[in-house]
Image (tube, rainbow, N blue to C red; front, side, top):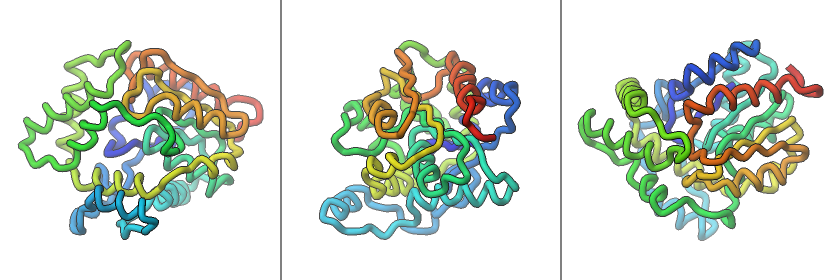
Length: 275
């Protein structure tokens, strides 16, 4: 079960990644989170003011949001129910990793193994994103440009968080972002997902209760969620393995996709892992 990150659609998972998992004997399930791709969106409702949400949270208030990350975790359970899958190997990237943490903590009976890629606990004491990554985050979500301009902006955004040691192929990157924008462009959904992340807070205490066999993968060059986030996760989740990848940013580069998928399969086939 592959859980996407903030604003990402299920078509973001590369063929190399999926085919490697299939080659190891797994059925692969991918889907769009709420407010992304072709899943339910809330565009007919208000778009949150993220600064107002942050101020309310700092004052101890509880913002009125369309959904929370716990709802997105429960969505995964409902999808498993619909597909008749009692348990699954769960992999979450970035925000998908936040969702996966809630899933493993709230519904442990549904999780065989847990892989968390480029994600963190949300601990506010962790190092923040780079200044460039913060600027990229602030820019996304308010785009009203034409399709061509959106493609150029998406490419520029991808280059901010890509892997210095594994630069993307320009032709393939352009084709990917164009396909995503053509399939669905929901800038207000990105903002609502960010509000849900803000409201989720610190999961440090919660992840200590996760008992699924866990693999944490993080790039040492991640500008959006620095690698200290992955290191903390691995330290807090009992028995978790940590794999730091030199030169990897906030993405799964094409050059590393098959190897990361193979590591996920290795975890799933480890003695003691159900499935």
